[in-house]
Amino acid sequence: MQRLNFHHLHYFWAVAKEGNLTRAAQGLHVSQSALSTQIRQLEEQLGQALFERRGRALELTEAGRLALSYAESIFASGSELMALLRDGRRHEHQVLRLGAVATLSRNFQENFLRPLLEREDVELILQSGSLDELLARLKVHKLDLVLSNRAVQATAEAHWRCRRIARQPVSLVGRPRPAGQPFRFPQDLADVPLLLPGRDNDIRAGFEMLCEQLGIRYRLRAEVDDMALLRLLARDCGSVALLPSVVVQDELRDGVLVEYAVVPQLHESFYGITVQRHFEPPLLRSLLRRPQGEVLAPVPPA
Image 1 (cartoon, rainbow, N blue to C red):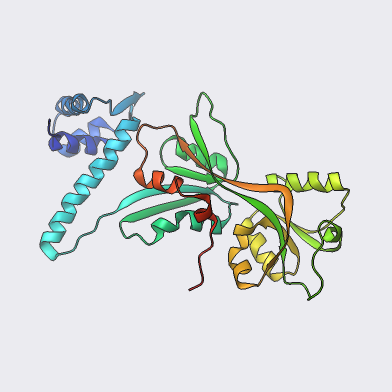
Image 2 (image 1 turned 120 degrees about the horizontal axis):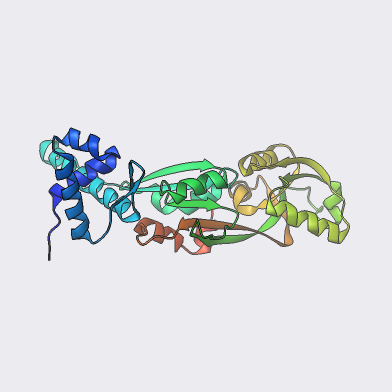
């Protein structure tokens, strides 16, 4: 079996980090032509192009990004070996970069990531933003996964892979009611102040359609885009909130809030969005294969 030429790999790593062949050659104190030759020899050995030219700039291909990830791990391992032999310490880690739509439930995100949160060999890079912002980062492989409550469709320009991670009914929740006064759905809906998601939310659109079908008029206390804020208002202001129960899983478990009713035919879906790629990180595969019941299950009390 042919052995990897680590000298060539180091030269590739230097060019990839610099993003420019001339500057990398200067830093390595070799000629630009010699550096180009060694990069080409590495590509021939791997059977994959590692760079593509965009004007005067060099841009990593998907194989190049994967090779860079391995190169960084290899050279970091070399540094760890020196540290281990010098002072007896060893540090190894894998990196996973995830983005989540800013309005997505924090509880869902924590549940989804729970298998990795206590692993000392895993480093998580977590970012939030709008769906468009996160997809732009995903497209150029600055993220490995985007979590969203909206599905996306693949296009000729963007080969998204959108997988549904979990689906949960939407509920009306509020503070415990006096004994002997159960909440009657939909009869009591017009008599309580409601906290609803913003009008761009699919849950809100489905709820509006249901109210129209049933001829229900409701009292709006507030509409809230951010699920974290919706959770706080449901807990603290005495209104009834429309949301998936995962958003208030801790309050439901502790009895601070109770579920008044499950709204018929209304669900929230949670999606994991990746780009089509030949090499998917093993950590990502294990997360996306978790059963829905595990992802939505609240953390048991300590």
